[in-house]
Image (cartoon, rainbow, N blue to C red):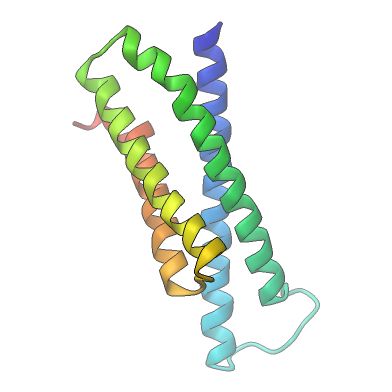
Length: 137
C-alpha cells in the first residue's frame, strides 16, 4: 500500500515539474519574441508576467511534492538497497538540490530569467534521469 502511494506521488510530482518546464519553454519563447518584436499583442498570447507567475507556482508546488516523494521513498530505499534504487535516489536528490537552489534564489535573491531557466531545466533533466533513466544504465 505504501509503495502504491509512493508511486502515485512520484508520478504526480513528475507531472507538476514537467508542466513547470513547459511554462519555462513558453516563457523563453515569449521573452525572446517580444525582445525581437516578432509578435504583436494579441488576446491569444498570454502576458509574460502571467506566464512567469504560473511557472513559479508550479515550480514551488513541484519542489514541495518532490520533498514529500523523497521522504516517502526513503523508506523503500532503506528496505531494498540495490544499485537501481540508489541510482534513483541520488538523481532525485540532485534534482531536489537544484530546485531548492532555484527556489531560494527566487525567494531571497530575486532571480529571474536565464538563471532560473537553467535551474528549472536541469532539475527536470535530473528528475527524468532518476525516474526513467535507470533502465538505461
